[in-house]
Image (tube, rainbow, N blue to C red; front, side, top):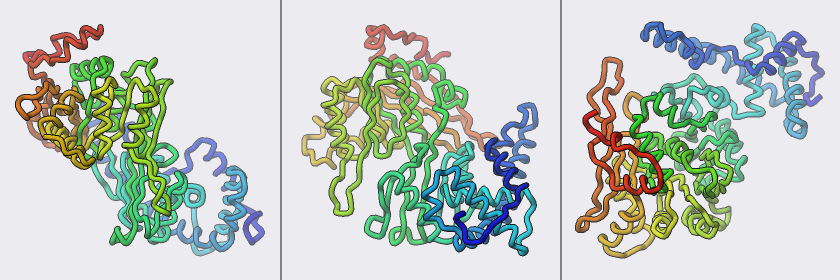
Length: 483
């Protein structure tokens, strides 16, 4: 035993916990996602009321549980030897932990708990010791897309495109720092006063950014972009009304036809998800190299090489940038190069690759419009120290990139593909573009949902003949603006 007091744990609780663990249903608090199973025939307002009630009930229950959990967690630290516990296999360690917590609960008369309450508190303490503490239940909730921690006492999540505050809290800033250290240590990175910002990822691939004092004035801050366990497909986007069938057919043809595609959008607009979906159209017999700051792409093809940047070490040495990885990838005989996000000087080598036979490349970029995306690429050349004339630079951009897809997260929380534009070439010193499809916004309904429709502009893209010659069927009817 690895706790100082001899224990005789509550057998009823122990067997109940083990059974619950086997069924993966420890937390009996009703979650928001469970409300989603409500019949589609029910009135929308009733469903909204059920969600709100579930949120409030969960909040009240958690506020009670957290106070008790913090109490027993502190006592556990005084009775359990975590060093010896860490040396055990996880299954054995969990059993020892359950025994210790059950003993503490049996000996305590100040915090009476029901069997169900004990079960929940025990689950939360296990999350503290073996997981990421208060973040664990949020990471298990499939309805949560982002987790935002603003100091120890403020934890927010994004559900269905909308932010909401949760009842989960940390004991103090030290507690939060311990969880941050646990996250970054998993990927061999560090965070301290000398390096107070870090990008990392969780074991499921979720992207994490953390920043601590002195840069974060009000305490440590953590932002987690959830990793979708089930890979989305174009069919999912169609079901979510994020794209039209005509747009879906065209971008599928563009990827299969090895056009260079740049996916543009703001933060949280769905760029990486769209890039994942587009990559699914790449033939399985091609060699694909992905380059990312934090690996999160989920390519399903058998011949994929995944590359990831590396930050500098304690001495400020050993950093490997995206530009260096792009350069190296050109020596690896790629059929396709996929860059998670173009944000700096790597744009030079990326466009150089696109202009020298590496067609079919995919990349994302932060920009509000397709025109802004090209301006940002131009600025990245300047960041890399290039001093060529604007006309020559724009000519390179126009010949390298074929299609720009614009994603947008609108105020109703939905991500939509709002524009697809083709780059036609140069006219004087200006890059000319033609919009092929767009989302025409019509207003907002009484429930705050954006109303609109996807339309074709009537412009037949210049790449149509290229795709046809490659045997890709892209009917002229897709571009008919009279439908």
